[in-house]
Amino acid sequence: MSGVSVPFMLDSKLRDARRLARQRVKEAHKLLRRAKGGVSESTRGAIRGSAEETAELARGDNVEGITRASDHLSELIDADLGSYRKPAWRESLEQIIVAVLVALLLRSFVLEAFKIPSGSMIPTLAIGDQIFVNKWVYGLRVPFTSIRMVDFAPPKNGDVVVFIFPNEPHEDFIKRVIGVPGDTIELRRGVIFVNGVEVVREPLGKVDVWDRETNSTAWTQQHSLAYTERLADKSYTVLEDPAVSQRSNNWGPRKVPEGQIFVMGDNRDHSYDSRAWGMVPLQNVLGRAMFVWWSWGKDGLDIKRLGTWIE
Image 1 (cartoon, one colour):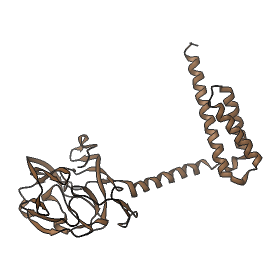
Image 2 (tube, rainbow, N blue to C red):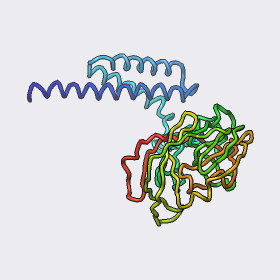
Image 3 (spheres, one colour):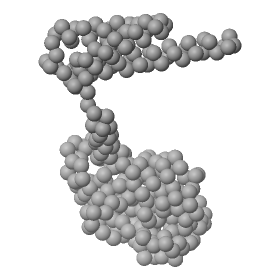
Image 4 (cartoon, rainbow, N blue to C red):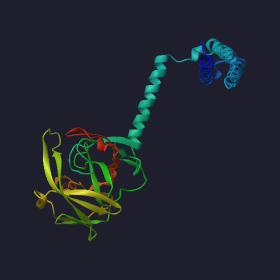
């Protein structure tokens, strides 16, 4: 045997002995709590003393001492606390239930995944993008309802929000906030005016993007004009389709009522939004879009989009 293998074997035995000892100490304390008044004070004291000795030895490097104390503790546990052990299937089931509850709480109050089904938010969001939505940022709501328990901060102009579609409450939509309560919104030849002030946009040139009707497998190429639009503290890209823009380039003016917001898609001429069906009640807002964690579109996985933050 070489001079290298002996220390390695000893270190391995020491690590294993320490790990087992700590597991048994942890189990002893857990079962004592579970037993409560089911064991005598003398028995409880003996087990605690053995656990303390085992824990102390586990901080050293005496493998035999650690093993001896650990085995003695295990014998005490088996003799006096064995009946308080839960079956392995029950332990596993409880762990699964806890994991499910934590996932449900996260989904209800903190974070939820959302898949982009249509091209109304191109180029900010592509069809097939899967994003995380921050459900905590605006407040807390009763799970699976639109009832808010606590409000933190209202959506701001420029935010990309997910909300319950007012006309069909079983559907969730995603759009950009263009007007908040008290704002007067108007579109003139495709340009947005908020409270009479023009929202600045700069031309970026012609772009070709692929769009698809919801629940359809047929992709169509859209020839558009791209613009950088600046609203409040947000800067983002919007598209205008010259072939259809005449249908939707004028709207309003209309004031956003209290408790509601005005929303639009970034793919302006291919978006079913507040211009068509009205305002969104604030209580319908589920959260703010965060980033793309997965993207599977026309050509399969789009690695470049992964991790894209949504502005």
